[in-house]
Length: 435
Ligand SMILES: NC(=O)c1ccc[n+]([C@@H]2O[C@H](COP(=O)([O-])OP(=O)(O)OC[C@H]3O[C@@H](n4cnc5c(N)ncnc54)[C@H](O)[C@@H]3O)[C@@H](O)[C@H]2O)c1
Ligand SMILES: N[C@@H](CCO)C(=O)O
Ligand code: NA
Figure 1 (tube, protein in one colour):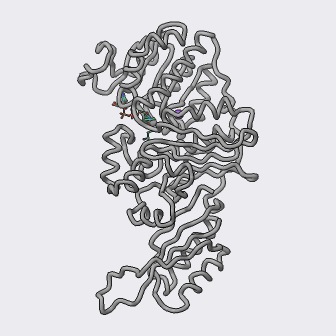
Figure 2: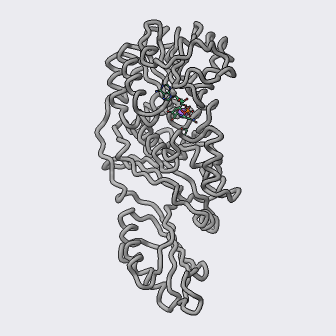
């Protein structure tokens, strides 16, 4: 059986190495030897002598490689939308199995890829695309297919979890932690994909589509990155007995589904609070199965290559048996995706206020006006002011934690607070999740 590898970067080079090192095991599991027919790269002359592969196999003609009649399986680990979409749809429509790690493409145009797979009666597997090495998508699309999933809550981006962990544990700056994540092979080629939440949003769209058997577009996922998370937020979380984590939350509700990714505070006692570094963890809550937790390496070349190899073995076995996987996810349901305004959670709000009698009750009244009920209110100390010492009005810092309220209620409250003469500045608003 022959395989075309498209891309030979962090993940691709580890696929090459593992396919070489594990060749005998893979042959035993598949029932025949798997050979690499060619590797598409951008720069064929680059020194890749550390890789256990014949240098004559490198080519810049990826599409030509995909179309070669002797190629059975196409493994796409180059990333990006085009030309990856053309390579994959060409392979599928010619009946070749495809294994990809490309969540950006799956989230942007999963429907086209699925349609090509159906038309070509070919397998499309992408376990590496979400939560790296962790087996999550196959459990969602196979093992849990007899159940109904109500909620998926997790950390699905290794880079931003690594950054939050470093900021919390070592006091590293955002920039230092991001640079280290890049060196360790966790970050996307364009780090904005990680820190602005696009990567997590793509994964959330894929998870929600599979979990709820409906089509969730990338544009329907509410997305906030972690670039606004400051050392002060991390410290405020610690004072609250919490840590800041980049979360993905997808829920099925009676009137639709809700899908969001954003940083949030989570109680230190919650299992997600101790998921550190580039590790990912995902809770799946199913009607009959109850709560399931998936945990492991969410990024990194070797770990991700494990998921790619698992998919290669699966599709190779299907080809030997002359079958393809049944693809129920191709039959998209039609559940509405709810707006962020309807999403309900708790909030941690910090503000600098004037230190005078009655401030507390008036601030509380602004929350009450929008039906937001308060869990705790704390005066954290005197607020810093940039005014000269002799002109400084007395100020204080208030920290409020709310009970569950909708995003719309909270936004309206913050709007009122920021226009109030008593509130100098709303310095931070962060969701509190995990209960
Ligand atoms: N690194 C991870 O931890 C990880 C984890 C899960 C999924 N992924 C996904 O795997 C894919 C690859 O990620 P990576 O980290 O290996 O990226 P990378 O940038 O290290 O490697 C991609 C390689 O593909 C090559 N490439 C890009 N366009 C090409 C083209 N048109 N023709 C030939 N070669 C081309 C690049 O030159 C590069 O060497 C991406 O879709 C990424 O989102 C990565
Ligand atoms: N850049 C991604 C790679 C794994 O999908 C992450 O940090 O999670
Ligand atoms: Na995975």
